Image 1: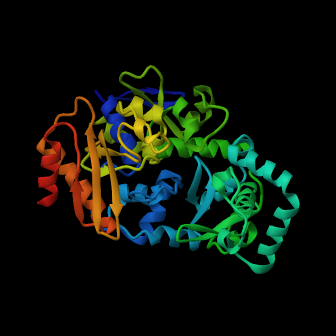
Image 2: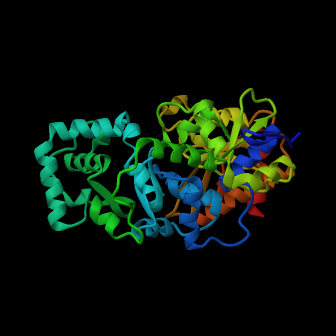
Length: 422
């Protein structure tokens, strides 16, 4: 049952939602409830990232690099260069957020000034150690960029083998990344997904709206990230909030009381949850729809392993009953679902996973396997939805030939092949 159950004079209206309504509210906040009613436009890229608060960066390119895939899941077919353009045009910035991420340029100053969170982050600690060990070389690199202008790691030629650690990067790449983590360099643009670095002050000076020079205090930054986390998640108990922007320490119900009192957050009770949940004030209309059981999920799509819906494995398990492990870091012999299995979202439920590889030169989208979750019934609507998601993804890649090589349960492979052929 979903309803508005009371009005508390201290916190305002209190709503009660079913678990299913909470799922749908989360997906609508993330832009994954329904198919878009029109073709994607260039401006949709920055708007979608603003809606999520960030877009995590990962370089694995078996199907598509994660940031492009996350956008595809929400926008459908779009042009990948729109993301590159949004960065180069100053609509987006790169920053350490959940992990390395694209963030709205208008919110960059919060990331820039989040000193407490960065202090314990592995990238910050590694950058500080690297600077202590190679201060003269790093200072010389920074001066070269100051004099010559923006540079890429490939602009530094080196005959000696790459070192161990830092993913086998050559020293100059490590130094560039260290200066990026320390805030002296920023990413001006990307070329073939490779970072082009420039001095931070020169990058932000090119933006349509450069960030303020003043430093935000820690409490202001933390309150902003807490509110943005709840807004991006749609609905969340306090213990889910800190992970979104990797806040430390963890967020508690007591810390949220001032945000309730000022109306930034609304308190929600969810059937089966033994703790209160929270919704951002900007979603009050969406909350009322959820309380009236008026949200409907129609989208079927494939998700990146680094999609905000799935990156917090505990949240995905509690909200959707979906247990997910990315297996690209698991030895091949021990993998259950494949190197880079993509969660399948069907009409508001995580129903399975799909392991695929896009062979762009051959125009082939190879589906190595599809696995439905235990208890998910094999229905015509499910087969049609998964097949459509596969074909949509294949077309976006320019790999129109689809080969379904394996699927479980029995009979799914044949049905998917027929649906994709049709």
